[in-house]
Length: 392
Image 1: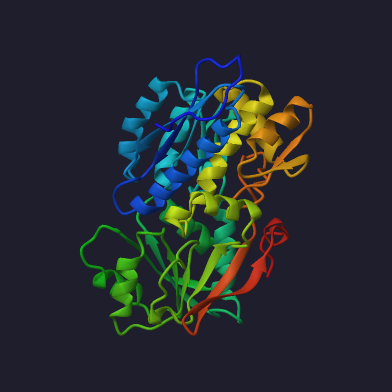
Image 2: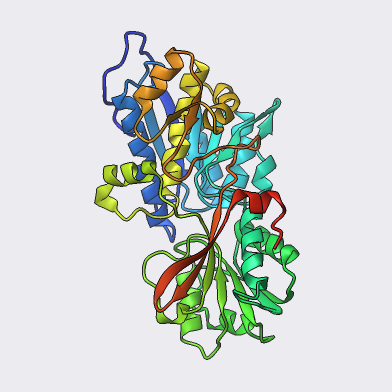
């Protein structure tokens, strides 16, 4: 539980309680731990500015282990603690499992990383949406990956194999990708990231001699299967889902592509990186976790009420692209603008975070390519590309 710092007004009473439901053990430990640290930093920044509505913020962190069953069992501890909202889940399976429970309890859930398209309609109750996210839906990622696999200047594939990590994220993004491809899907394979050996998986992927591989995975669960490919005699370009060009680039990645969320760093990202310099470089989705917590607190301040329904009602308003800009670490400015009756426009660490009615951003994607051992950016697919249905 994060400590409460700063000076609080005379009206301060019971803390405003938020939660974090992230994997801080298992294969996603590093990603989840960085997300937890980012949420804690948001709490520190908010409390340093006097808290929400003059009340201190407390954060209760729960380890989901990346498991939907573990997360649903442990969610009860947050509900019993009286949280008004929480950051999580990380993986889509967890978010899909938690969304109806949070909605029934009128608790706001903000995911920093779950991209499953079904979440666009998840978490609805009493005319409100209690599930939001600071990453876009996979429907955008599928459109971007399909462009890379089909386009003559990129993979230019006629025959594609799809390899997806087990779970709702992998299966649903893989289905959306297959539906959007002009190329023929000759093989569809899923894999268990906890398997002891991946050689058989790679052989299955290449059984029908694809021109390219569409690979859907998450950071921390991809390397085993990719190392098995590197040790094999198979050869074809791969197109990765977002977040997999991070850190070391092995030689066998040469010519690989990725559809990644635009990596144009906001000022807020650099401010957050400075605050978390001891764990730099930040893992994927850490900035999104900060934004998720800060946005919920900003919505509560704007609404004048620290409850799940009030946060759900105000989230789009405080993030939607109009009003006076506030960013990372500027909760004192949030309070000043709210007290003056001004509208807010949160510009986050991860992006502008302009939420739609589905409480999710419509973000730009980058086409990236590995060339001579380095990742280069070759095309920016802006939101107009996706609004037009991904017209080539």
